[in-house]
Image (cartoon, rainbow, N blue to C red; front, side, top):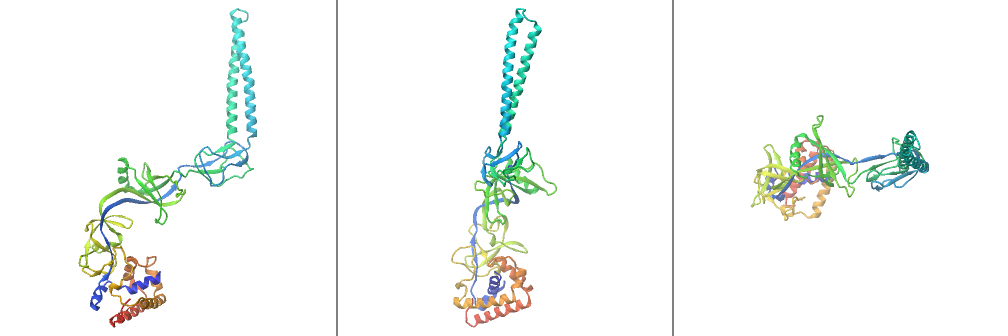
Length: 453
């Protein structure tokens, strides 16, 4: 990459190359162009977010006993109520049987007491027994009735404990790694649980926006609008999922000056993973009928932003513009352009107001190198040999300078070329001398009729 950048710098002329081309009889400067268009552009807020499950449950045993088996595999998707694991149920089944037997015995006692009450009621009417005997029989029957009610509760408790031997999932989600192996004794409510179940569908993303932007968000929310939220990967190059804004927190964090928001995603394709870092784009509004140009067309100078507009006679005019909203590589222009204007997107760093330009055959946004129409008459083989010789010299003298002043730049980008021209005076003497020698030799070769690259 470094060699390719240096090759491009050595081949491309400096900012005054247009004048020298005219002086030496060269053709117009080749440029990349694009047309300003009318369209829609989104007003978005960018934020950093964390994927947060709506529910993360540590499943703990509710009764003590030996863990017999797991009914699910690690990483398996389960639904709420699915059996996860089983504890030895024998002691709990015995408790159910014991409670049922006690209930049956006490029900029989209650039935006998009720019969006594009925018999004593008839006898007391005949004055065959004392009223006290009848009252005692009624009290005994009520006591037996209370005992039966207690026994029924004991049976229900025993059955609940028996059901707890089959550990079920409280939520739908994915089963994590198991924390206890089969055969171990587990305790009721133990701290680490046996597995963790995490709800994945739907899933949420928590992110924060500056407090200065909360007004624009709340106006849309209060009007009943559903705001779209896009989640991108760490490099912001791949969209992971699209969801909607769910909740805005009820207070501002005074330590950071931000407000937390939650967005919901269906996550049907499992593209979002719990605790994953994501870049969030919150769509606040969509502006219609905007004049839009590629971001590469925008140049900046001491007087502000400007573009080079291509005139019908293949010259360019420098025109000041007022920038609007930017969305990705699209830039809205609020003043200075109209739809249909042709702007320069590549090669603007070599132009000045009124310069002649050579337009590409297609209306693509960029061109990578001057074409044969721009004055190149040398054969491809000769050009390749010159580039190879130059690349060897660049590698020897200029690699360190390029890595220092222009790191991590795309080889054919306008930013890389501007970086070359801005920092070339800072390059080492060896590098500058080598470049001057190479470029001087090419100019002499062209003036002598040998052609140029």
